[in-house]
Length: 531
Figure 1 (cartoon, one colour):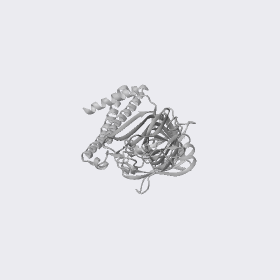
Figure 2: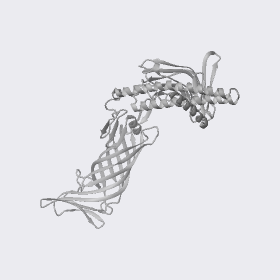
Figure 3: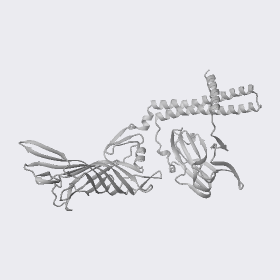
Figure 4: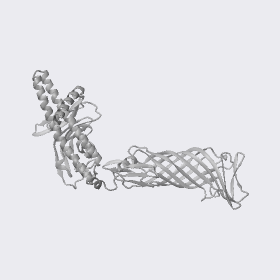
């Protein structure tokens, strides 16, 4: 009964597919090689015989348009059973003519359509221009999880490539892989991903058989239209074809269901926990900078930079972007320059301090060079000055002067809070790193120095005075403008290693607008850029 239902569904699906289908291309074959041919092709694939070597089969891919944004390929896909857990070398002979971009061998190891386990297409060692016959090879490890191996030859953009004698062979495990994605780096695939992939494969099997039945029915209908076969006979043949396709579905789906049952049993037996480790999916909290690898399935929360990384790849990708962000924190000593000197300051050297907190963006200026960066952002700056000799500030008309207090005070502090936009030209000597022979750039990995400035507004000024009043601790807080400058602008520079720098700032504007004696704020301290 189930088989009858399946056959009926297949026939109905084939009919509906025929009604709605809009062919935009199809797969074609040359010998035992396959390629996709769209309705408007960019490439011509063909088979040639070499007069000198009659036994050789030579295939070629040739561009048929002057300008192509894309690539053409010809390929095979095989089951990986003979290669599981082993290293495979793909070799072959290629000849090229007028290759504008590049050409090469390629091989890919897949787990269904959800994960590429290993891959190489000679992109980092391309064939260009015009080259006579030469032997080329690529090497990949085939993980035990693999479900298919696809391989072939590709031509990017325009030109022509010939190839022959493509061979797959097992090689020693000590031979290094050549791929962008290396099979030996592959980690186990999560249970949920595997289960979903098998479910998708069961659907693909069904859809493939339906489409194949549709093609066969189309061919039979054409024979009826031409009078080659009778309508009665064609209905009998259609039923037979549907039975064959239903049998194919049953056989192939049974294999996938067996894999799914084994997968569930492995889950019950705890094999996935063993493969992924007890810390799979764990979260670590970091304060400051960390260069430790966090693994594929772990999460790192960096409290100081306020970033969350989901696995090492996410961390690498985000930290090597052309523009990255940092949380900036700085603190240190603060004072004023009076008559171009700080030797006889009215403020305590150790008691006066500054702090700054903000967010900065670091943009690599050159696309392929890591030296020069534009660094810009937004910060809150706190400048504290503690007067000496029992003094505090008093407003005297348009001026603000330091005067001696009539009572003994335990602390006097004058604070200004600014919102500023710093901008620096940063020289970063972190250089270029290589991963799988691919260059990538990270900042804050070596010596850095920057030079630039800042500009902003004064958010508030406040004076805090503390004293003893009949054995009571008293604090007076006075807010106002104190005739302080409403705008701030100055020069700044820093030099350091990795995230820590020595930081110097100097205000070009005077602290007070109308004072006869001009005093300019100066700060020296440590700066931390948490990437």
